Image 1: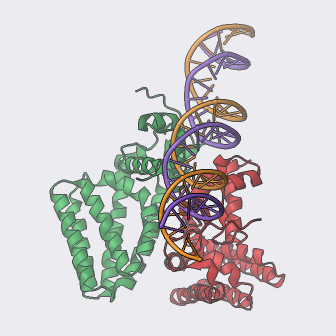
Image 2: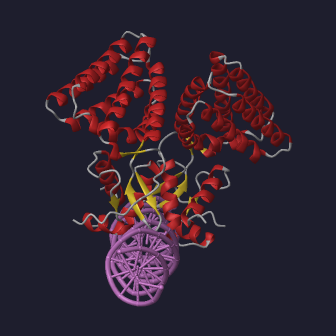
Image 3: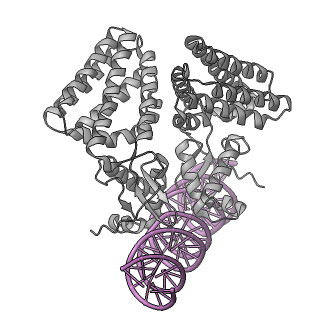
Length: 232
Length: 232
DNA sequence: GCCGCTCGGCTACCATACAAGTATGGAAGC
DNA sequence: GCTTCCATACTTGTATGGTAGCCGAGCGGC
């Protein structure tokens, strides 16, 4: 069985990324500990880790808050992601064996099924799996962890983006196109295709921001925490 | 004044990267707390953070050890670094203003001075500053943090590499060349130059490994911790 | 002499207690 | 009514106590 800290950490992280915990809302070590039935220690340690990831902001003697989405961080995450995934793709072209192609196609199909069933959670899971596998083909599975870390900021915004889900088929189609070009060993075209795909995702964020400005912040770490009693 | 945790964290991190704490050696929450004159809590929290960075390995109920340098991690760090720095350089070409060039040249000179004075600590500091500034030119200062994180593994090896310091002038010369090409706005050449520079650094690691195999491990997370009483 | 078991000492993990600091609500004074 | 100050109820930070689990040495059996 995993440690208490790891369980708490994963649960909190999932809640934050799923926007179950809204950006800006206060998190109390005491309340969370009571709610989860554990002591403050593992909760506190989890919050410290989440703070390192930029998912929460900790203000000493003041409070801990789910961080608002910093547009600067999102742009930075996009840059990191694009640079790493494209570099990995360059190394993947020519290396991809039939087994890789089969596996990637399987993930695309799984994502299609999830989309048709309206299973957005599955959609995201298979999306992650696809991109992770793509990097693994080029021998850069470990670097995926870096992308995953940077991507956390991006993902919170994307959760809102998907409800306007006309894009799902488009995104999945782009995945398929990348696989096709990878199989054909057409490096430049595959790269351009993947770049377009990633940029499309990024473009969504701006649209989301227009709709839900309260979830974003103008880059500042967070000028005014503002405690909200928000009784239960 | 910074929090106790932050102080402890920074001190431990610096010690590990400077190889003041040898890979494989045991770290005890109790001993460190006593030595630093603080309680176990900030020490423990620091070790957790260092564990996330891959600088220590924590085995529950067993012990915490300074991690051996995992060659897989080094290769991964190299990939990440190369991808991000080169991508940032692409964005920097054409953007670099006179002030940027001046500042970069200043850092190169500072590094030269440090090298001539035999100040290897300064050499590393200005090396970091140079690469960080280079990424900032392209507007990707935030992404440097990602590189810095990945680079930690690499740096431990590099500390050993420098004592054979004939390379210092070569490395500094390469920095200068990159700046020149950046000023000339010759993107492809600048890229190739930086790539060569980064690969040279990476090549050193293999040489170091041959000399100090005990500091490395064959990738496995660390099959056998092996407690060593190693009296003081 | 060699193998298996028990037991002591160590570890990190979790829980709890105490300390230091901040924002809030309300009373006192103008 | 408005301002000022203070008591209070929070917050995170740090210190300490207790527990489960693992390692390794030494004893007993073969």
